[in-house]
Image (tube, rainbow, N blue to C red; front, side):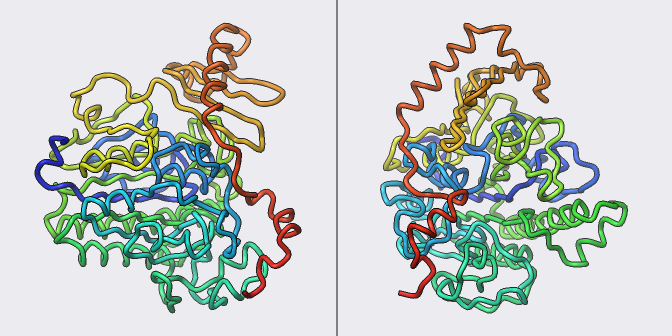
Length: 447
């Protein structure tokens, strides 16, 4: 049994933002968008300077996070469509969620915000280990409650109509009155307050700053010096998240839970710089690609008194490690073989090695792969390849592919070996929306 788990297993809190740029937190150097509360996590804990997610867009990235496994191992290779009658459109039943894992150790489990792992009745949060759910099932949502014009999914007629559905509390539609980010923060504080006397797992999945770009005047007024309207709105949306993080951290501290709560903060993928005016500087690339800007994200963790505070950890880690860390600390055995590792020994210095020799990425539809092996990065596409030394070239301006062909071939071999362990995609995704509707003409019709 792990040393930490011999006493009382820690609460686990994951704060996930949506499409936030690498540069857009104070702990990564932002001065234009202050994030003092998010930065508290970094100040009280450790910043992962090489913190990755397992895919460059949200659906597959979240599937990896919630299972601790490369999502291509179970065919979750695409952003799922809104198809509430399709039991294959989302997380397969073969996979164990972090909530299902931690319930075995007596945790109370909750998810707030964006689900995006399936809308079929068998894939919804309350059927996948979560005791409490407040949020929405689709890949995005409107932020102003007066725009929630659909009572239920049975009323929608197109993919993005789901952005306008009323929110769910478990399986019941509710009338919300607050700006969505503020509502999710309110619910997070309430969850912690109600469950303070037992171990809890809270997955706070903000949809901010994902489009549509919407913010209240309260937050917009904080950025009068940002002339670009989209960038100003983006900054306001991030600031709203930061306020909520502050309220949540304050409540955890007020209840005396800080030293027994493991808190992760990260984004689900890199910023889509054109869509929401985010910044991934100094990284090259953006959401959707396998350059660093698409998959390296703002990422920090705190566990006061257990891991170092105010420091950076420079070896590569990945979002898959969160599941493995929680499993070890809760002293429960996962159902499936994990791809992540327990990070605690690495953060405390007990293990001075690298958590991972290699990390991998696959975009099945684009026939694109990537590997980071130690500090060497290779991206392969059907018509070209890019190779970089990340120990000296964070922005990846130099393509070293032609300079070391033997290394490139060795990395290709590692990718091919890994690819043999993966499944084909199990469902058509967002890029195949029209094709799916053609094949399923009753997709949005009532049962």
